[in-house]
Length: 377
Image (cartoon, rainbow, N blue to C red; front, side, top):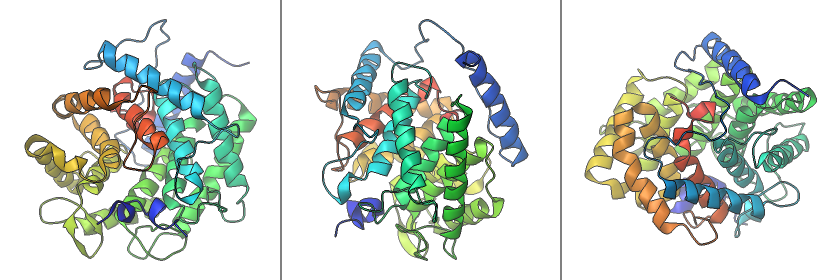
């Protein structure tokens, strides 16, 4: 399988409020209650303490912090005037996917639409995604359809970013705008689900494959964790799709009925189930066992062809599953990122571009700071 196969997003496009800290605690408490009401029993909001200097998490060195700061500065200075990021190359730069990933990276650094060194950048990014979605009110898809014909990866990432931003927003009118976008986006995703339970590169295509499917699941779960209603049947059907894709070795195939384990999608399956608290799911257990075995015996397997895509989800899987797995996995990944960061502060990811690589590198390095509910243990 080629890089363009696994990234259908790129393949098919070729032709005056309370103090922020106290508000965050209140919001997250409400999110936890909403999650429990919807059956997400593993969601445990973490209180944010207001500190002059944040505590450095275990395994985060001074060099790591310096790399994070350089990368955050890189994203901030490369943001477009319209609030978007684009990657060089095909498909008009995939502004929805790139903007969503960059916004997640900035929020993972403790920046919200109202707080943090890069709060303005986050706010502009969220506004761009909302404006993009509002141009498609009739369908609900979050995409710039003039340049993003194969848009479901970006749609999923945008749901994830907006779902995380929703609980951080203090302005009621802006929060309402985000909610309306997400309600339409959820409807579009539900209506685009295949008979088997997955999704493909375009809405209502009737097809499915793993890499698009995991973006929809995680986006939907971010919405549900934020208290926005998502029909349980959609997620149940999607999780069953992953189950039907599981191979005898515990890994996940590219799509149902197509044999052969795909390590990146296997890591993604763990991440999306664990981020929703499904720690006792048997499918997730088998996927995790596969990933842990490979990380211990053949860590380079996840670097083949789709290194940053695999890193995005494998890091989540290792971090969410246990402290032991994280300590086994993270040092190698951290040191590799420190070694390969450019002087400008960027990482070039999977041939897709510097925005993509830098956003993913930042999300991974900042997981221990636990600033995003979807990535918290």
